[in-house]
Image 1 (tube, rainbow, N blue to C red):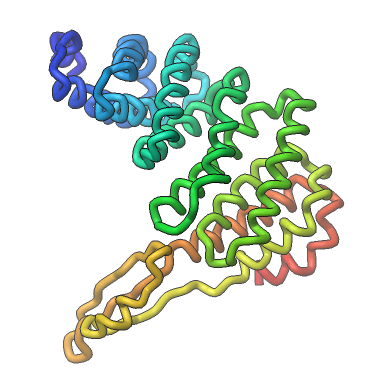
Image 2 (cartoon, one colour):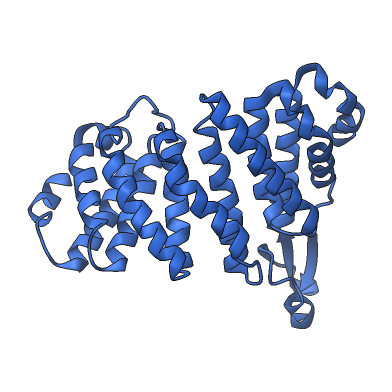
Length: 314
């Protein structure tokens, strides 16, 4: 399969370039880590070239290919084939990130955020932290949440900030300063948003990363964080059964939330839709995960929350 691609790698046809990037992404996911180990150099050189292509579509496909390349190595973190290429790849990504930010290209921003997170989860991202973190903070502060797309971008940005923060955990002084600023910003933000807001799940994911690093020192934030995690974990699952003919009721479902729908034909009783608010469900899961992380990492400092935690388990 790779052999069939080789003659096409020098093509200047943008359609062929885009198709090769898609194929490389699929192979990097399906045949990891063999593809990365045996053909990683070829793939990464092709990606690096595509990232400076004049067409945005090609740049976008290259960014997505990086996501596939790195996600295929989640269970094979010992494979560090991308490290020699990080200065070039992340340098190009920083330029694309800046242009996407200035032009409010949310589709490109989402791909870049996924790529950053996938790279930071496996590799040493600390040398590039200061290149990207200011831009991430800018997204959170400047992008409104008045549409589902903007809310999704803002949530994903917050999660990426958590992944990048974890990447500098070995530099205690740097981590401490950055962590204080980010935690204060997130706590302030969470105090302002509604409990239904999709950003709550992303914020709690960052808290989870931080408590795993700070351990018992997380006690400076734990009262507020526990309250939010407990509230999320105790929330009822938002599920409704709606008649297929009741279009008006189904149309009133909140546009700012994601829903999963299962259609059942009950014959005599007609067709029913079981509608689940997946945002609420995801927030409930993340709240439970956060409580678990706090109990595992805070030691005796967590004991004062034990009674309330038991209620979640019950």
